[in-house]
Amino acid sequence: MQQLNLFEVISTLPVEYYSGFLHGGEAEALLAHCRALQWQQNEIRMLGKPLQVPRLECMYGKDGASYLYSNSVSLVALSWTPELLQLRDRITAFCGHEFDIVIGNRYRNGQDSIGWHSDDEPSMGYRPAIASISLGACRKFSIKSKVKGSKSTHFWLEHGSLLLMLPGCQEGYVHQLPKDDKCFIERINLTFRPYGRLK
Ligand SMILES: O=C(O)CCC(=O)C(=O)O
Image (cartoon, rainbow, N blue to C red):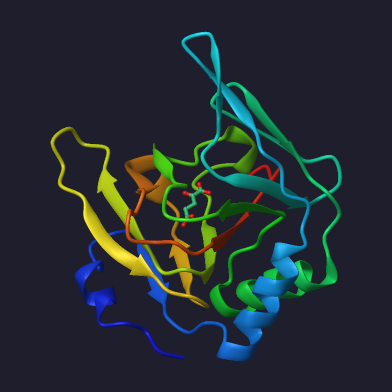
């Protein structure tokens, strides 16, 4: 498995990047599987007005799990598919972190995005690790410290790659996937997260 030189650039950040975590055929098969998941178009309320989230979303995992963000979108977990469960266990065997749910983001093209945020929903517990798998289009990912005036670091998330956001990342940093006017193809992202653990 290749660990990009980019890793050196980001070594001061609480993230690890593994290019080619999934081999070509595996990544293609997983992408096909993910396209058939139950995607939904959610809305948030902004200044009292409904606004479509600029991507499709889904959530799978632990029975009864629900995930609220922006005080308006509540994702409810559907049962694991065998493919997603197998991938979760493989990531845990690789990195040692345990996960209970996976949230999917489907960026239909470069006009879909996710803005600056951290994933600090209390249900994920204290200092969660999050494992992020990228499929399809290669998109730019940006991360910066929450300290005012901090500069952001950018790198590209390739098809089949794994990005680990380590404990401390959500507490100290924000991240985003900005729009990309030059991207015309789809990208699917899977973020495996802990849920409902006491520690
Ligand atoms: O699509 C990505 O790589 C980022 C997803 C993300 O930031 C999130 O799900 O919180």
